[in-house]
Length: 173
Image (cartoon, rainbow, N blue to C red; front, side):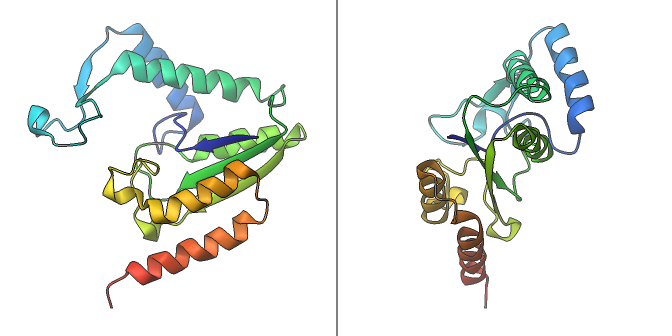
């Protein structure tokens, strides 16, 4: 089984074609180190284990790898027989559209596909597994991820209900 979590295949709102164009553009131009927060720059707190800058070439290489997997999925089945896609409706850092299209392609080749999307009202950040990130809500995300890794096919409906309940419990009265 392969479990895709917060997978980066491209930027949100751009779709596969424009993300491919952006990938090629970033691979063509010289590398630039971009501040994660251009307003705070070196004063950006973040986590001690996270870089304060991001390489445009490194980002483009990850996008190129993602596009290669996406393109191959048109004609090739995944090496794993079972695929679990875990997405976060509140994630503003990545596109959830491209991975969804990817697993649909794999399903057409006979892969068993299980999906779970954490609802937007949980307000999870992109780093859903980092215990140092308060928006990760590991009390909610870890049980789901453990079940996905272990191959629990009943997860989709149950964990969706549990995640919605956790979001309601967090809401101000």
